[in-house]
Image: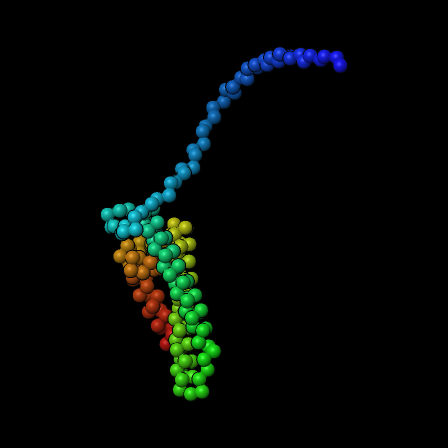
Length: 173
């Protein structure tokens, strides 16, 4: 067998200069990458802070999300455990009526909670849209005390009273 030898070739690269264009290029501002704001579990929004700053939004988002989880869990438990006693049909008419009434009250409570979950979802959407904490009618700040008491509030107290008055007038018709 004949011996073969490998020959290495030396490759040289030539550098070519690229002339830069004489026009000015303006650097585009980079989108500010926001680091997620973390707050402690005991944090409570203060009036001294800027209204609806990022801390406030994080606080209310956490509070609404936690509230929604509790409601969903309670509804699931009520539906699961409430359906367990369907099989116990009593011969006594009074017991049947009482059971029916209990079921009716329980279902109304579940329906109210489902509506509240819907309101929580709408409030979370308002947080994402940066309109949370402002009245939907007047665009005035609702106020921290009101939002802490009722995180799904959509109106200032004056606007809420006006809505309730209008509802009462139309309900009487």
